[in-house]
Image 1 (spheres, rainbow, N blue to C red):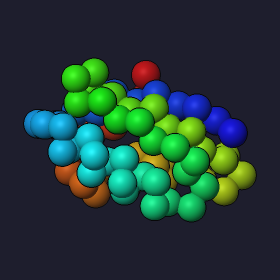
Image 2: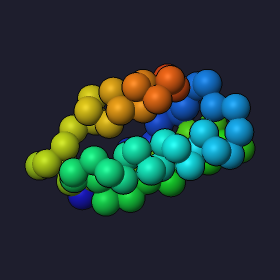
Image 3: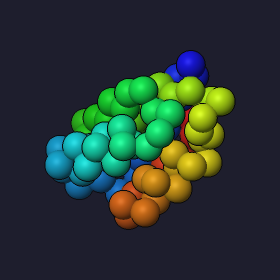
Image 4: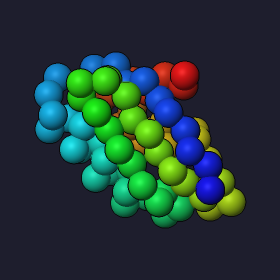
Length: 70
């Protein structure tokens, strides 16, 4: 398992964070997503043999937010 932290640009409220968590946790290979509106970031735990960071970032972009690896 890999744990990756991403800064998230474009969140406006706590619901934004919940939307990101729900979207990521539906992806095959994502074990856990913890997004914080206050910190403007997400931490994702995923199985790198099933999914890669680019797919995760693209899922976040589809929701209208910009993930920044950091």
